[in-house]
Length: 496
Image 1 (cartoon, rainbow, N blue to C red):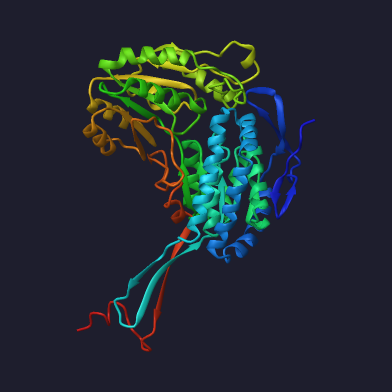
Image 2: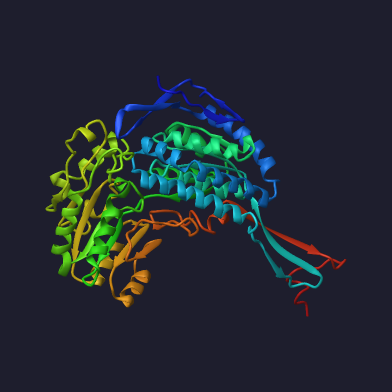
């Protein structure tokens, strides 16, 4: 019988108010039930908010360096349990062990990086315009941070959000994707083991009802969301109306440009990793391949040959290179893009079907797919698919490649392969994305740099790096007048 898990609210592991649960299954083998998890709603969120408010009162008064010490211990525990967590994550989410180990490592890196920021929550001291007056700014926590996280990075993204929020002195309510609740459960256990006060972290499982209640609760002033642009837009409307601070990290339609002077072997490795790593289920996945016409035929032929040889299966098996999609609806969405009406004259040159093997019979697998002859502006060239589908677009010049890259509604990541240093630096300036790689694929963000995009990918805030701490804190300006008399800024300063 499958294990039943609970929410963590008010310092206790508790059942959902509704008494309802959902099953969490292994996407590589749906016969494998990981557990039953709470299908929570507004009542559970209300209880979490009450507890989180008490946690905030305690935690916000804890010196930031001591908050950092807790996160450093979290990093140490993650190091010790890395292999165990990676295995559990692969079972739950499907991507291969090498990737889930990397997912845990991102959590480790983020923990250690955030810990150091406990001594670096800088304000500024500046000269006052008046005599015998002191002026400075400081960073202060905001309150309860509601975090809504996706399935594709079950450890990394919750840590991207939770660790800076906690280091800044906020309490946290985490609502993970219902596709990966077990990893979130493990993360909360680790936070508690590291010494985080119990009411500072709340874990509420569930789907849309729980997410909607968290976003709309009047005592949750900060929301951070990673997911689809349509859901992010709806969240933005609520948060705008309620004057909440909101960080959105949404869709991408990332392009890798291969110029005629590129190292094609290097570009091939990048295309395979960028397009089919995580089974294409990354917001930074390489979804478009923009290839110069002079190398198009050679490069696509090599790409097709390599894609056909990728091994699908359970990500915990050593020879597996590509795991399953997360669920049936994700696979159905991918298949919908192979409809002739969507192809619009493009041709499927690799993949384009479900695999037929005993190793993949009980999971949500789809063959790595390459579609050639994709027209700029078409659905295949502009819509986020979030699966193992790579659309190839032929161009005749660098200028055309830039136009094709920039024409989509998203602006997360981009890359260019070229041996021309001048062209590489032009691309850094010309490509309209939050991230641009040179001679590397569109994936591979590092924890100590800001992460995010432009246009409909986000709303201007960044995850990661130093910028995220500004999102989870507020500026307070402090003045001390030690003149012993009334001084009026702007009036007495320049009174003639």
